Length: 239
Image 1 (cartoon, one colour):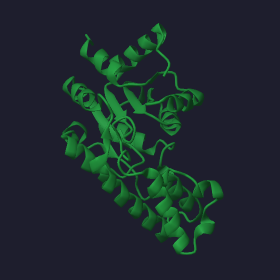
Image 2: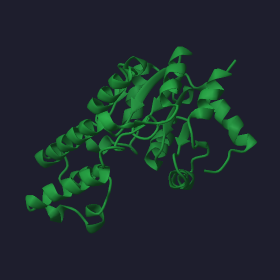
Image 3: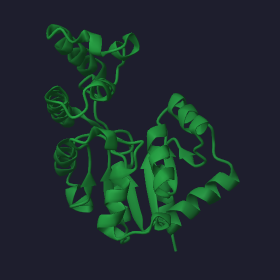
Image 4: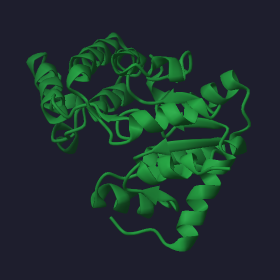
């Protein structure tokens, strides 16, 4: 990870100071959902499941090789939008996400950051492409659900509304009565950045490794941190 310049530090402090509402992506900034339950294996199992039903042809070769199970879901939905097949794959993915939740690895400093932001009076929401059921399960297990409830906006049956579409961000802003410039989104993927831009919400990238940072920078992210620690420190010294 590259170190932050003085101007980047000032930009980070400004983002934090102005944020009255914080929209969190889930898998990445809050935890590594598939840390103990391989996402690659889940994706492979979904590909195999389609193959057993004679439906391998629905996927391109690159899609069959993906390690992201959500890409399988998106691919099938592009070819058969709103079908029973898509609904079944989505339910299978949700069950795998729920199976992964107990072994998910908390992102360092995420828990105290969430509690500190809440204690300071900021309102928090989850805006994710994961199932809201897994978010509920994970946050409850960590004792963090009250920091977000009821503002958890995740994957719905309308898969075209997944990020980079800003639908979940707009739902959160509307429900919380927040103007986009007064909010902040924390995400770890270019799709999070694109959704935030479209919604008019300032964006802070979280990149746990150099590859993640490169992708965010290439997509146009200006403020990117490799740890949540400087955010927590900035909050604790905020006037």
